[in-house]
Amino acid sequence: MRIDARFNGPPTSGNGGWSAGSFAVTAGAAGSGVPFEVTLRLPPPLETDLAVADGRVTDGSALVAEIRAGGEAGDGVPGVDLSVATAAARDYAGFADHPFPTCYVCGPDRPDGLRIFAGPTGDGRTAAPWIVPADVTVPTMWAALDCPGGWTALQPGRPYVLGRITAAVAALPAPGDTCVVVGRAISLQGRKATVDSSVYAPGGARLATARATWIAVR
Picture 1 (cartoon, rainbow, N blue to C red):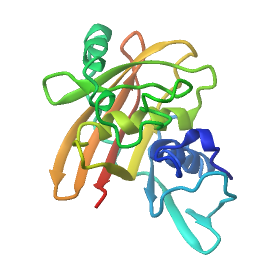
Picture 2 (picture 1 turned 60 degrees about the horizontal axis):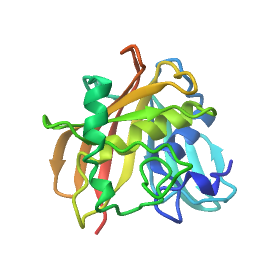
Picture 3 (picture 1 turned 45 degrees about the vertical axis):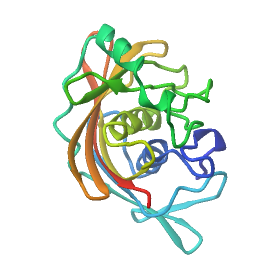
Picture 4 (picture 1 turned 30 degrees about the vertical axis):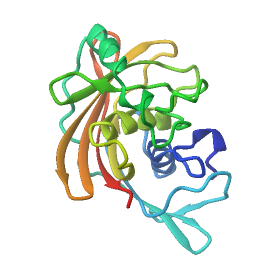
């Protein structure tokens, strides 16, 4: 398998959520609500032939990621109304200071990205509206779950990257739907942040949830 260059997080590696979701799909993850856990061991390389076998993703002899069915995807983050998410997105911290402004999911410099700009709701959560693209897939949902959780931990001058994510996708939204994505920090300990995130359909049904570990970059 290959990660297309358009699905970057940092400029030279794959977005963590998209990459993890793509790896999980090769191991059987689908929109059935069954959780899968992916641990990233290296930044996922772009435009590189990767081998996936026996729960391992490798680039030659280098271990890129490990995959397993199961894991703890969290209890979900309570949703908010679309109006609350829209207001929160206006205060998205990434507009002023973004470590990776061309990120496929949350980069303000990516007009062709998912453009999920999760801002603070004032109660410890982040939230954003998300207009679902025409080519929505299970990896798209993993990507949408990724950054909104991360922005509950990111601090100016201290970027974090995804280390592990366990996601459960129950259903895909329809292309063109305006969903709401929410995130919440569970714990912040040293360089490690544990965060939850959820995606809600326009009618309020929860479509997907995730628990992730982010690691601060030294």
